[in-house]
Image (cartoon, rainbow over all chains, first blue to last red; front, side):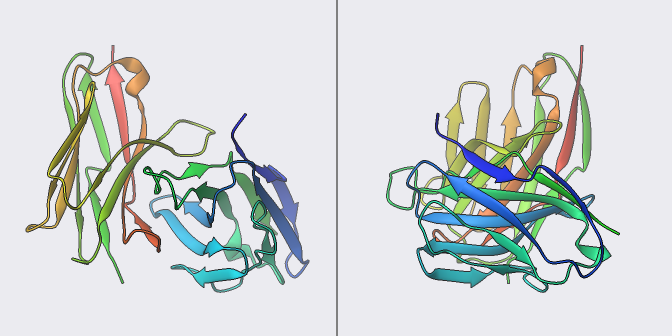
Length: 115
Length: 111
């Protein structure tokens, strides 16, 4: 089954404790992206990647890191989480080569609470 | 950067009526405009999209129109059904680059 998976789905942590949210897709997509969703603000793009070893900042990259060492994985790293990073996070991927190249497939979301 | 505004933020319609959600964008270079539906507890799912070389696109009860001159695009849902109740997001993008989303419209279809 074609899908984007994220882990963990729920996470409670404390300020300053490094964490990683994993994202994996099995569709051989080149484009992957991370978003955060906050009430009244919609989805805001954190980072995106056009291909392996290529990453670009989105609208709200501060406090986040990403890496794209393999095509299927795109982890989101919070080196020193702060309470304002409490949010719902979505990973997404799309095939930049197909006719419907921009159809983004979203993962199920990771709800993060930073105390 | 791009700025996408979406209206209304909430919308209630009677079952069978039509629903229209409107978005405006600021960057004339944007050339891809998808619409997503998000049900409670799930990730957004693409329902229809349109590129800047097309003015209108339809898929059964759903249609999207694009006015490049005025920089706005709209989602039209006809013959609404209770299962259409969800949050809808518009987005604008330059293909292959950053995506900018609207703030969402919560649609309720009243049986």
